[in-house]
Image (cartoon, rainbow, N blue to C red; front, side, top):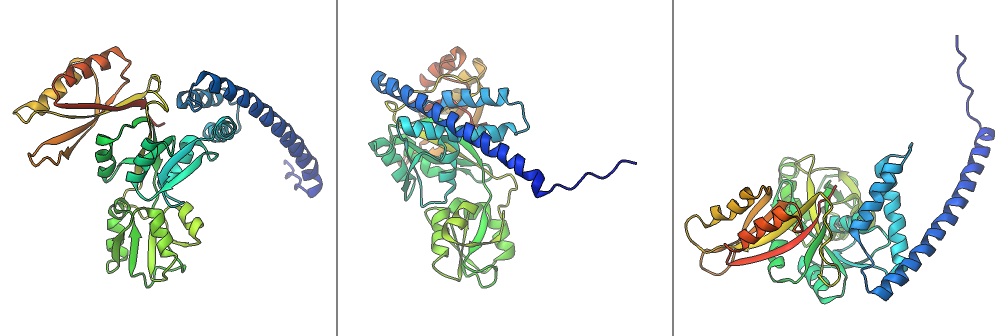
Length: 368
């Protein structure tokens, strides 16, 4: 019969902790050595006038690190560590300013950190209009805006803003969104008002109807703003992220109240073309465009023919009123592929010839 293992004692832990301390010292030295090389890279980029932030380069490094990873660390955990290392090194080269929907604690903030790392400088805006304006005016080098939700569809305001903004899309983040009900006291009793962004209220409507049927649902500019307001009145509750609850000192009285268990929101990373040109093809890309066609029979059908002819798959097709008073519409289209690929370029050239208005919003790697 085998003997049970000897219990681990503090005497056994001491040498292991010494090893960890020694390894930490080596890691710190290597990280600073890497940072010094990154500073040299930054000087070369500055002289050449080339962009400091290259999302395609970040993706390549993260993929290479995961391929080399021998374990036991999980590949996604290694990627998260390296993203933070690269973010900190980039901050030494040239701090990146990114406009996001505020205040602190929004899912938009979370998406920005997931894309750029936590060393990024965030510029908090009251709404997506301000995010677009800050990015277009140069107050921020990049912006992050919501594009669509898996259960509630597109963020209409973002689509409208793309029409008249000079920015383009250079990346995306697909974020698993968990909505939590939070308030000052640790109970759902006595809640009179629930505050959140209109999209969040819609994504939680079945839960709210069942559990808080008499509470007023009040739309605010962001979920984090709802959490901030909930921290000012004991009869109010907000729907927001766990990050927002921590930020405003609130109790999460009901976690994950979204109606769809796998609720995801897609965020677009935007910038001026002179800040960053279209990223090169990665092999797994999306091209977004907005078009309008003459108001005649079969015009919308004709838009789809070039895509079929050249074997291009369409992944999204949304219509928005042109607000011209003539019952005209803009169509927002996502297709698989990159504008540098021959079959995509040929399809878009033919499609453009059919359009009264045509604008490519961006060609960029899809979120993992």
